Length: 300
Image 1 (cartoon, rainbow, N blue to C red):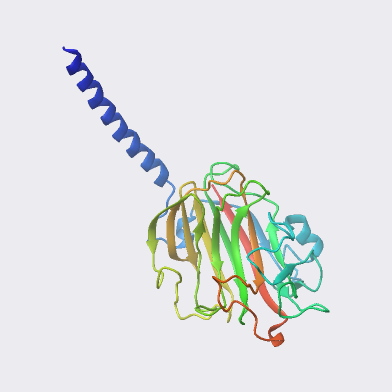
Image 2: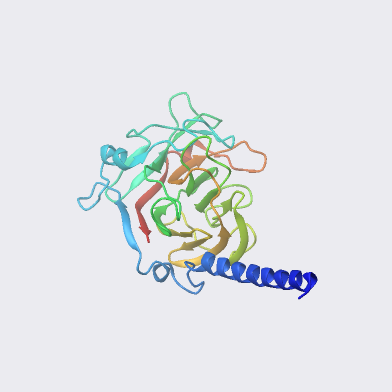
């Protein structure tokens, strides 16, 4: 065998090995992905509940007061008390005005404090962030699933969301998972669901029934009642559901140095030029509440 024949043979097997490796890697990436025809509860079949938080003063609730809330959640996430996105609200520490317990919910409540008003910094609001952190394949489990049952507020300038973001300052790289994120602004409102990923790990779209590239508009007033916002997160993909129905799925890798917290927040107002009309129009909109019935988390 000449040296050229030997080189040719070696190159051939290197190519074959590379193709096989690529196929194996692709199979590994997709091995945890649910069928796009499955409901959320079909997708999580066989997974274990690791957290089940029910909110309210009723006897069956697990989070019934501020003390219980503080045992499992923080009032500030990675950005702390810093105001981002030119928002108008200032998030508050746990207190009875902005964290209001009803019989069957926790209402994250936006208020106008003394001396406040419809201007940047003139609104007090609330958010909660899990003390537990999550990242598939890193924080003890390969797949996570989340369900946040909540009722969003109507009214101009309301910007409620449930999302996953990096826990610690200095560890973020833009990686973010949102479901849902509503913008009550010029071009969309409480009828328009959005739930996007952000960051360097974005990959190709797997599935979508969105009305256009920005929103899903199912002619549902999401402010009129409670809905289940559900997320299925694997090492290589994210699937978004509303009331059990798959809306959007995308290949996605979490590339931030730190794992994620789960947060639910009520932002109100922004002066950012890319968010036209995202400002409250009247003091009569306040107090405004994002009401959380429960948060449930599964893993395997």
